[in-house]
Length: 262
Image (tube, rainbow, N blue to C red):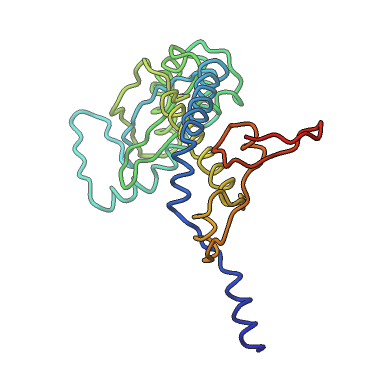
């Protein structure tokens, strides 16, 4: 007896999820999915368009080397060791190009009145993997200012690099240009993400409501859930009396106590 009781207890802990039922519930309330996707997507679009200031990015790419190549008649042969050394020093060059001295001199040359704390937030660098190339990015709210500051850094940085790292040189591979498109925010992408998020929230909400709804709506559902046969059913007297559903001819008593018939 104890063994049987234990088996029944373990069986009662098993929760079965009917995926077909969940899909029907989602399809039945698919209007809610579309509505929430539209609301969240529209809200995301409004926030990106009206509450977030757009920024613009101008950048240049520099090639750095650990050998000075000054003089038109001077020939320098680079070995694999030289290349490896230059690659390892690329991070040093990147740090120099975003240093306080370089940024303040560049801002002065560009005619921009910004403190170093602000300039530091505008400029970022990136060393391309396994190369001697360094990208310098300038991201600002004004596209013209971003371009002017990038061009100024492009002009000032080589002298600082050659002075600080002896025997090194720096050449510009890609020059800075005036940005035409916004860098942030990505309105289209963010709006699409917002719409998808809204749809997912609606679907999760529908699934939770369906899983927590323990009501039995039909005889077939009762048989399916508990595996029992239906002997009989109690009619809905109120619906039968009002004529809103199928009538079974049952009588009813009103408030006056008089019996009526459907």
